[in-house]
Amino acid sequence: MSLYIIIMGVQGAGKGVQAKFISSEYSIPHISTGDLFRAMKTREDELARRIQQIMASGQLVSDDVTNEVLRDRLEQPDAANGVILDGYPRNPAQADWLADYLKSRGEAVTAVLLLNLDLFTAFKRAFGRVSSAETGKIYNIFFDDDGIDWHYEEDSEGKFPPRVVATETETGKSLVRRPDDANAGAIIKRIDTYLETTMPLVDYYRRTGLLREIDAAQSIEDVSQSIRTVIEQSS
Ligand code: AMP
Image (cartoon, rainbow, N blue to C red; front, top):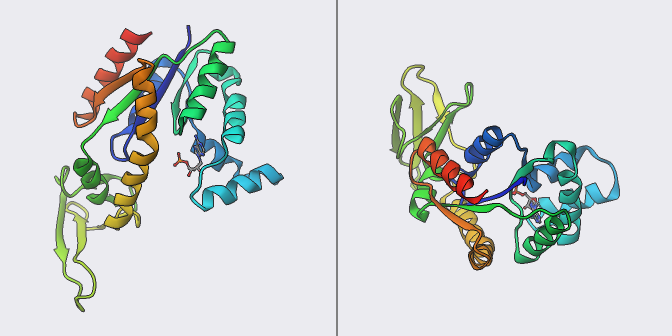
C-alpha cells in the first residue's frame, strides 16, 4: 500500500518543515496545490490565466479544476508510492473526491495529520518572526532571541503602534519582518480563515477515523518523531 498523508495546521504550526521531513523520510513527493497553481504562472493558456486571477483575488479555485490538477499530479511516476498533501483537500467535497479517486485505484488516505497549536502561540510565531535579508536566517523575538537585539520603537508622531526593531548581534545588521507578519490584523485574519475553512474538514476526518492530532508546540524534532510514530501505526 502506498502512503497518502494529508497535513493540516494553522500557520506557524510547522506544516512546511514537517511536510519536508515526511517527504524525505518516506521518499514521497510533497504536493501543495497552492504551489501547483503558482507554477502555472508561466503558462499562457486560458485555464492558467483564470487560475492566476482567482488566486490574486484570494478566492478558492473551483473544486473541479483543483481535482483535475491534483489528479494529473498524482498520476506522475514519482507519486507511485504515495504523496504528502498540503493545502488539499480544502473542503469536504474535495475530501470526498479524493477518497473516491483513491478507491478507484485500490488505495486510501493513510492518515490526516493535524498539527495542533494554541492560537496565541501561532500568532506569536508569525508576529515575532524576524529574518536576515542576507542569509535568510530566521529568529523570533518571543521564542528564539539568542543572538539578536530588539526593542519596540515608538512612532515619532504617535500615529501608529510601536514598531519592532531588531538587529543580529554578531553582524549588527538589521533584521526584517515579512510585511504580512508585521500587521497583527492580517495575521489574525489568516488564523480566522484557517479556522473557518479547516474546522469542517477536521470534523469530517474525525468522523471517518483518519484524524491524528499532533502537539505542534513541541520542538521540531519531537513533532517529527510523533509524526513518524503516527504514520507507522496507521500504515
Ligand atoms: P496556498 O498556497 O495553499 O495558500 O494556496 C494559494 C491559493 O491557491 C489559494 O488561495 C487558492 O486560491 C488556491 N488553492 C490552493 N489549494 C486549493 C484547493 N485545495 N482548493 C481550491 N483552491 C486552492
